[in-house]
Image 1 (tube, rainbow, N blue to C red):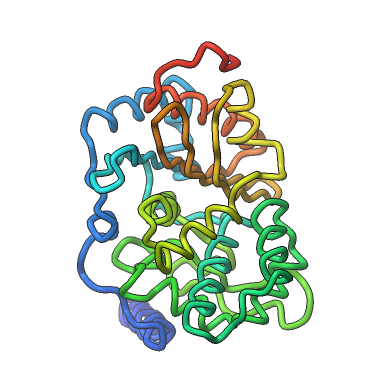
Image 2: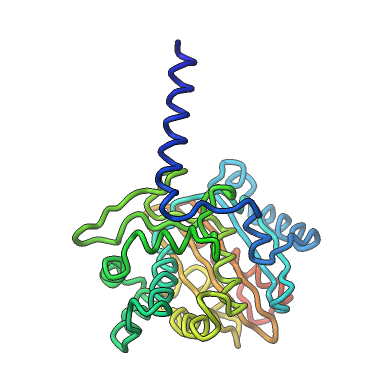
Length: 302
């Protein structure tokens, strides 16, 4: 009898997930990495694994409390990819605000929204200073359903059940009508995987978010980070770095994702870490990721 009840419960859960995803267009069968033109590079993956071990993160990897992705997009049409726990979906705090921005620009392209100077400033505050007030205002303006439709669309597949989920915004960041629905796989209100975060920034580097013009505008919005921690603080001692970035922090959950340019190199870094000292560890992590792509920088602090 117990087995029958458990089977029925699993069937019901699967049906609920299918119903929730149906309005948004269920993702196809192609692996998410392939959809972005990402191919895992064995040598780079080995270097990433070595870095993770050197930072004593193997235990966190085993407990699925830490995930990282790295993409060399110096040759934007032939990116090289490496990842550890990259399809583990975790709570990501404010990092999924990038999905709000993407859906907003898609609505601008479709003519449903006007990209006014006021909207641009609102997007700047969301990206650079992680304004919760502006993020919630943008969610109400765009609509949860349109954000989810963008993430699950065949064009992006930034939330893909076949890749264990990805970016998800199921709740605003305070204010009226704050709650919508958690992601159907892991029941997270603000979720991400490093693979899908890395795909977002890779598509940004390739001018493939919305279109080339909107990708350039989105880079402007994500440029000039206004919060000095994690990836930004880690590379603070490296002269000549340009970063397009969005982070997230809530209690023990720490997230960061960025497209970084330095000395002719371009790379994407994404990390999620559930740990009280996660912010400090992401500072150290980005120094190591930077060295994998760009070599050791004399200006970089230990």
